[in-house]
Amino acid sequence: MKDIKLCLPLIVLLLVCQSNAFAKTAYPLITVENACNVTGAHHDYRWDVKTEKDTAPPFVTTVKPSDIAAWPGPGGHFDNNTKRTGREKKWYELTGRVTLVRIEPDGDLHIQLADEKADSDGANVVVKIPYGEPWCGIRKEVFSWTKRKLPFKTRGVKLALTHNPIIAVTGRAFYDAVDGADNDTTLNERKRTKSKRHPTPPVTIWEIHPVMNLRVLRDN
Image (cartoon, rainbow, N blue to C red):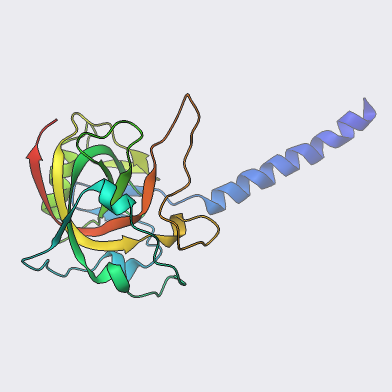
């Protein structure tokens, strides 16, 4: 018993240290003031590229999520200062069914799209919408699909959907290399959970980011 009593303070100290370490690495609390504005956002990887405000050209390539899922990764080195290269310079209109929406620690609205008739294991493609101008109108539309009341504070949260519209979004391709595995930039599928209780669909590393136009084609 003496040995156990002597160890207890050490155990408590270790738990406190672990808790403090987690607190330091956790994302900061952000405030979603309204559909357009976010305060306290954590600006991260390749932020300049992800918030470009270029206008889409009149003619773009039309794709669906399963098309993007068939793309290979670009290969090569990516870091915080990497400029657009290769496929990232091209514009696409992606059409699909909304399967998930969440707010991220950097203030982005994260939307996942699958082929309209895809089953639960169909490939999902992430499209992202930054906060502020010129994305206010697009973000208002997306929040209208959810049950979330504004304003709210979060470190990132999935938003409950009232329906799953079929939409078309336009933007440049973006390879989100930080979501890859073991720095292998030839891949195009993020790590996922395949458990029977909580399976997740395959999600591509290729994204449309930022979205510069969004059209609702029909409700679902």
